[in-house]
Amino acid sequence: MKFLFTRRWVLFAITVALLAWLAIFLGQWQFHRLQERRAANGLMSGNIAEPPVAIDSILRVGTTTNPDDEWRSVIVHGIWDDSHTIVLKYQVREGVAGVDVVTPLVTGSGAAVLVDRGWLATRNAGSARPGLPAADSGEVTVIGWVRTSGTGRATDVFDLETRAVSSAAAAKVLPYDFYGGFIAIDTENPLPSHRLSATVLPDDTSDGPHFFYGLQWWFFAVLAVFGFCYLAYDEWRMAKGKITAIDTATGNKALASTSSSP
Image: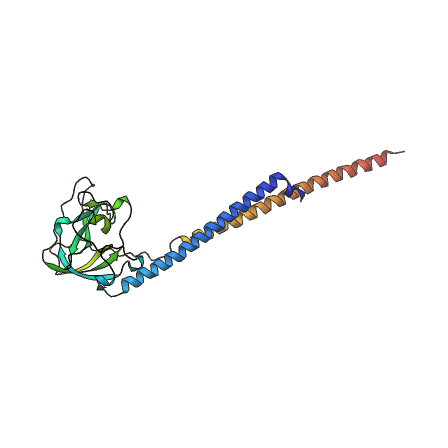
């Protein structure tokens, strides 16, 4: 087994060890993602099951939302400001293009909350603002689910259109102090004259592919080590065969030399 200490085999062993370590690390990362997904699914399911509470119990004006409060149900009273409705573009449902209609609901304190009133099918390709059903006038009571604001440049609002909802981005162009996050509407009282397609609750509470991905990476680690051991065995077997052949040839020559002696 002296060949294992040659330069070629030492470098080979180091490479295999690094690959096996990387595969084990990636497998552990997938199992960590699995635990995170299970925790997030449990939190979401628990929040959806909670009864609605007053908006001030969950959200605050001018602050970000707590991620642990996403999908909690809240109640808010106010008046729609339809003149400042924001179009959330590129919202596809079951292969149909559309937009979400996001309207500020102004509360009695003067602060407002962004409310996603629902989805509207449209052929709008993003180049022109689609025709939207107007929000009703008068005071309404809205019950909806808390959503956290989007991040990045997708939240920028131009001509009352955006690609992701953010109360902080809306506050830059609308004349209100906003509650953090926004609300995806569940019910509205009185009932609206033009009802949009309802909010779709998340229904994928599975573990996802993380468990099998983790097993796959660990299998790659075992395969790398097994492959190295097999190749080392094959090298040893071939070297042993050569030595045996040389010994046999040497023995045959010695025997032939002895037989030919007078």
